[in-house]
Length: 254
Image 1 (cartoon, rainbow, N blue to C red):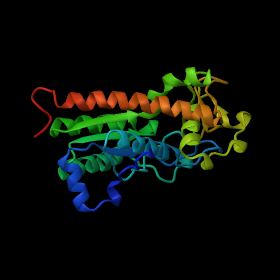
Image 2 (cartoon, helix red, strand yellow):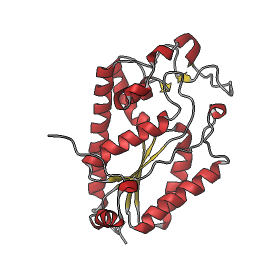
Image 3 (cartoon, rainbow, N blue to C red):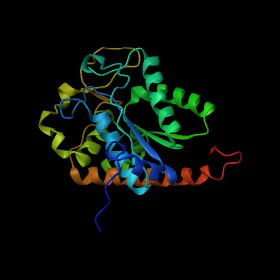
Image 4 (tube, one colour):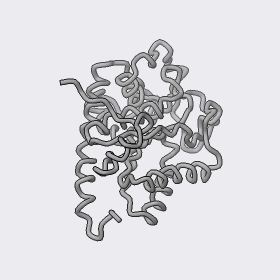
């Protein structure tokens, strides 16, 4: 049986959106940034991965995907990012308004799929503010952090970091034509940032935690296994969370 396609808000008419609201469908909101990811991955990797994961989850959880937010908070690689918010509160205010507008339209459950580490703190702050003001359920998923536990069993190495085994494998699975293994040169691309030394820009864009650990792996079979484990884990966790919302005393629903 052919897998259904994801439902995208931007492709729907108002009648279709009203049907989503009537059944209280969850809304998936991908967010990333534009910045260098080594020479083997596209600069839109953070957003692309968030989009693809949101699409897959929305199918299994019968939700819809909102337009992606591609302008994030880039720090160390800011020289490679033409699309980054500064100061941070500008990003927070803008994104917070987007979430609140979807809530006012009628979406009571919003699942943010974040693909960029620089967004994490801002997302946590703005979500806390919104949930204090509104009877809304919000989940923030930093997908690569959830995926770290699958790196060792699938690739027999430690978790990598930026543009490393996690993101490379996700891109290889979702968008293989955008991955260029021939451009990856460990001697030039790998960099292990030192705790006491900040370099802007870093001497390499594949930011590893340990030398020689978690480097990009260009294996489509293992990439598929990695993404499958990630999606299964996320679906199970979100199903449990969504079921719990209706049981909360006091109620999230207005």
